[in-house]
Each structure stands twice: as C-alpha cells, then as structure tokens.
Image 1 (tube, rainbow, N blue to C red):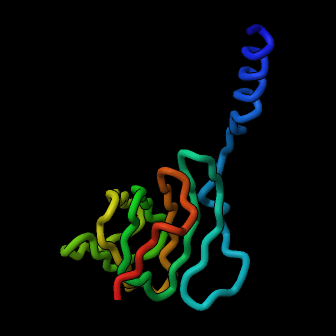
Image 2 (tube, rainbow, N blue to C red; image 1 turned 120 degrees about the vertical axis):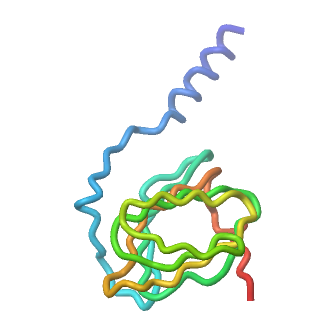
Length: 131
C-alpha cells in the first residue's frame, strides 16, 4: 500500500506544471501571415492559452465543448456574440460560453492582438465553422 501511495505522489508531482510569467508588452509577431496566426503559450488538460493576431477576420464559428475568454491587447474589431454585435478594443475582456456563435471583423489599421484562454484544453476538434 505504501508503495502504491508513493507511486501516486510521484506521478502527481511530475504532472504539476511550472509557473510562468508572460510580459504582454514583449509579445511580438515573429512570422508573416495572411489573416490569422497564433502561438500557444501554455496548455494542460484543464486550459490552453494562446496569443492570437488577426488582420482581417475570424469566420463565424462555435465551440462544442469549451469556453473561451478573450482579452484584447491591441487593435479594434466588430465581434459577433450570438446574434449581437459589439465593438471590441484594447482592454476589453470577452467571455464566450460553450456553443456560442462568435465572429470577428477587424476595423483597425493594426492587427487585432488578443490573449485567448480556453478551457478545458483546446485541441481544435470542437471548432465548428458556420457557413
């Protein structure tokens, strides 16, 4: 029994993620891109965090089994949430519950730069594009 307990403790300790500090002022685009690009900052079974840049738009879509929280860092856009449109800008926080239709159309001269936090872990499988 002690051996089993020790194995469980060792397993749990090895699964603890290392804490991270991210300075949003230093988040810089590295590669050229046509419309949307992203960089995964962190991921585990509970959550995935991305920095995302959008030049033009993100098509209408929903997520079948996760919630997304978006923090706007730079730029401005029109964002559809469900049937409603909102203007989003730097400093805004948007919470997108499971199954909520959403879309972004950039209106600023600079790309929209956001921090996207998705829970549980985002693997891309549950993204449903609406035509």
